Length: 377
Length: 76
Image (tube, rainbow over all chains, first blue to last red; front, side, top):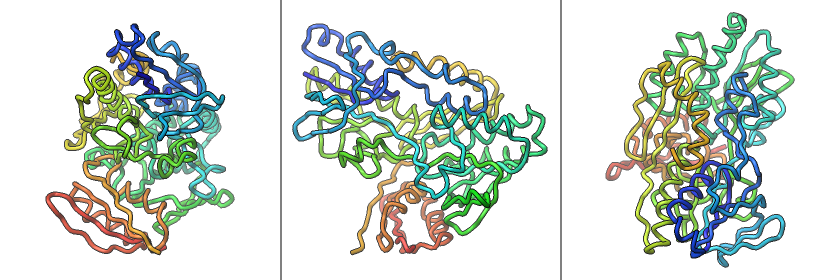
């Protein structure tokens, strides 16, 4: 029995470790082979990029060797997949190697897509890659005052990121003693300041208290870098001195190239996490087209479900768990406080007021993540 | 020829049905219709609000067994 995991991010790593521990005996005896294929020998803690962008973490803190996170029984290869030949139960890698499988897991993640808005890539700061987060921090350090606009595309990875960055920027400029010279202006695509109603009910008065201005029903249409002007789909305009964007995201190029799903999102059953029409292919994390948050915790909880099901399929031929849509997101409410939102397909979130205790727990989790990736937390 | 796309956003608290619709609207052609399924009763109000503000066409909505079916058309 060959189990192949494509992708070494949070979902693929947790899934592989869970399967390895569940099928310890089968792997030891050689009855099962478990292989992870990844594009990199490094594993990045992506939520840390938010902190890099405001100077609270450094990039070197975000990485570990991928091999060090995986159970020794897992065969790990840095050789990304180029072709999915699902009818033959095979993939072909960039190096030209063919891997056959009995069960395939695709967890290739997503990438930011600033090209989806004219002028955005050239004129905005982003914090979704190491390079752009460092660039944003350098730009912030040089910023002496003016109007900072937060604008976003849809869908984007980490739905809490817009709120987190605006509150962290508020504190950042206060700490630099120039908050009175900065207008922070937050825009959001729908008719409230966050898609989760209960989060919006907390966040809007918090913005009022902090003097953050906002415009809702603002979907970015174009950016004019010369005039420093944003235009919205809704017909409004706003000027800026510094533009910070949470851009639209899409799935990875290899998913699009293999025509596995529009914009790189693979059609996935929301409960079994099987690819539609394929009972031996499972999809994790950002790569699915399920209408839930593209967030690390989503991949984490999905990986637990699929890991248990793969072990059960190997041992007695039937899955044992259904994914209930569970998501848990910390919300960094400035540099000193945080809260969280937890929800699933049927239970909405009910976030509490931010506290220093949850902020410290979030900072602790920034380190505990490496235990989480090993599938132990 | 115009097509109709179905978005199943049942159980979506985040990003939510309207955000799913906003993303989908960019991926269909002018003249295409979208039917979005939502278990959030707020969708029946907030989707037409956005559709009208942007200038697309709101076709209508109805509820069946706790699921709202909201139909819209891309107009520009």
